[in-house]
Amino acid sequence: MSNYHIKHLEEYFQVYRKSVRNPEDFWEEVAEEHFFWRKRWNSVLEWDFTKPEIKWFDGAQLNITENCIDRHLRSRGDKTAILFEPNDPNEEAEHITYRELHERVCKFANVLKDQGIKKGDRVVIYLPMIPELAISLLACARIGAVHSVVFAGFSSTALATRINDCGAKMVLTSDGSYRGTKTIDLKGIVDEALQHCPNVDTVLVAKRTGEEIPMQKGRDKWLQPLLDKAYSDCVPEIMDAEDPLFILYTSGSTGRPKGMMHTTAGYMVYTAYTFKNVFQYKEQDVYWCTADIGWITGHSYIVYGPLANGATTVMFEGVPSYPDYGRFWEVVEKHKVTQFYTAPTAIRALAKENLDFVTKHDLSSLKVLGTVGEPINEEAWHWYNDHVGEKNCPIVDTWWQTETGGILISPIPFSTPTKPTYATLPMPGVQPALVDENGKEIKGNQVEGRLCIKFPWPSIARTIWGDHQRYKDTYFSAFEGKYFTGDGALRDEVGYYRITGRVDDVIIVSGHNLGTAPIEDSINEHPAVAESAIVGFPHDIKGNALYGYIILKETGETRNRDNLKKEINQLITEHIGPIAKLDKIQFVPGLPKTRSGKIMRRILRKIASKDTSNLGDTSTLLNPEVVEVIMKESL
Ligand code: WT7
Image (cartoon, rainbow, N blue to C red):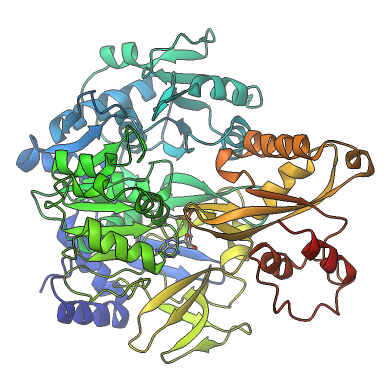
């Protein structure tokens, strides 16, 4: 029996039991079997969820890029590591072998060094889905710089906040980006952001669209000429197991995004292990995750997890609807993709289109289908299973978070029998618990509660950059001695988990995690707005869409409502990005509040979802009369 690769259900149970009875032995064996260490650890795990402090493989030394690249050179030098599929189907796909990847990462790393980047420095990456993006992550890791990728759909304000929060002095970007028929001026967004980032002294610009763009003297440099001159080998920086690998921001319940900090060894071991098992990757397979590397899914399951396993990982620059709604399936056919991993929102959008877009392509290469980011509804699950998998490919519904670094609950294909809408069983080493409002663990099956994890797994985020107290308050204070996920879940009669959705102020829109607070903060900046409250409501394609209840100041009351709505969405776009725009805006005379002044979002959610039959007790509200008005005028 190998701990590293689970091949049938009995083995899963055996491995799982062992991983819970003796987590340290379990992870030690995994770490020993499949990775390259410069120095062995002194202890496998030290942890204290009250501080909280978590250390995996403390004392060990390594470089993650040696594990993701160098050690494959002998046996897989000519194998494709990254298969780049451009936005335009007429542009040729690029096959980057492990040997080429090594050279390109080394050159990039040397450029970073030449530009003054040292171990521990933060580098913000604001790049589209082009090879330079994956390469830049690895180049940072090669020299021990901490990368912080900001999704290239975020606005200049969101970018500036993140640059300043992590204290980066360098930004990597490109002249522009392609998305379907659109060209986006990324460099322009960076220029705007940098007006508010005094610490950034260098911007390296990759060429993609070839648009004419202004370059600020002394600060902005074209990347390619520097790469051309760079030496093609770079000795990896030897990192401690717990040295930071990257910071990735996620939204929270206050306006400031949380910079989740992940460290080196545990993250590597866990993402590699889960990639191997959840996707059952075999040597000749071509694996494709459609996420953007700007999200944790891309970090863990486009870059690090696959490359640590010597896999071929597809990077797709485009969108599912360009040139038509068959693009995903055209790419699957073209590259004979074996594992395909996407989000429920994409599945729902494609399921709405003509079935010919799917059936005209040969999808027989597919073996495993995955979903991530939000609960998948039953119809979408069946459409995916029937038409994409042709009932022949297990669907892995993978539940996890930016904070968890890797997949925590998922079927293991060909082992775990799947069940629509269920993420099923925990990965080895993961100990979930359902907890009631009072923090008491709910044992047994056929129960529902708040989802917590009782024991550390190797890729848990170690802190929020610059704010350890917030890390403790957000994740370890709600339920003593447990990591609280923010999700609700139920456990069925056989112990399968189904994630029911967020139980906090986070709303998942098209698989994107959006906090209500930052959106409300941007709306409230409008001079005509007095106060606002955002809730989610069910949406056919996005899963959830945003509904804003807005109180206008007296001065706003006289303004044209349609114009106001446009201006408000414009503000949101500027502060966060178009993904956070409101689908519905209702101007209201007041918001239902408790006597302590807290907005009763539960009531607003029900009204937004047109589910007003049972609003619950409104008598304790400060202003119950306002509920009637809001209901009457609801959209
Ligand atoms: C939140 C985390 C994990 C990468 C993408 C999102 C929701 C995620 C599932 C799933 C139901 C899911 C949860 C979670 N979520 N995967 N398979 N089923 N819900 O990362 O932006 O950090 O969001 O996404 O609510 O807490 P994220």
